[in-house]
Length: 256
Image (cartoon, rainbow, N blue to C red):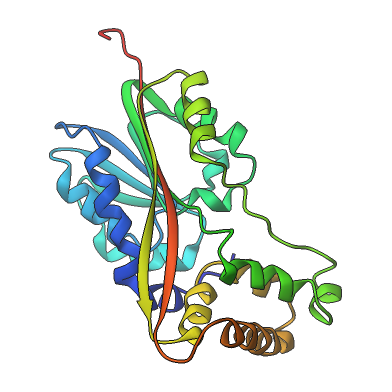
């Protein structure tokens, strides 16, 4: 997808808040081998590496643009690579992911695949947005279902693959995960107005639609979507509630 780091980071502080709730789920010890799936611009991968003593951290992402922003953070023990998460091979002590796995389909297959990347005694720790039932997201699907966008997209719509929290617990358990932690948290963000919600989703949820739409339909799509949001929300500040799922699990080692 044609990620635009500047657009994505317009709400950097709000997008980074869940990292502070995910990190405490990690069993920190020295000398870990770590992979960060969907590392983006590398800022949170750097924070992760800084908090894991004597560890080797690799951030992987499929966006060359995002990885270009990550290069200044490269140092001994911290590196980045252009990789597709679905095709990743290898094993690590910690498989970490912050706000990336919702872009991958079929989570019933994905979760066992994640556990397969974890060495015995290691851990997976993930945060994934679960806001697909929010009105702001439903209005994107509604807009994409209308002409001329529907024809330009060939009827394509993106439906989130994210599951319910109990389903993640079941999948982790069946795949051999132990010491499970699974929960969902709502982050209430106070934004300036309805247009700010459109700006937020333009850096994430709208990206695959604009990838498929011809350039001349980008602004008409934005304008119709903004109009729907303005009608749905009162003028002035609005509360944008953002749901996120967290899960962590350990892969049983020989000493457990």
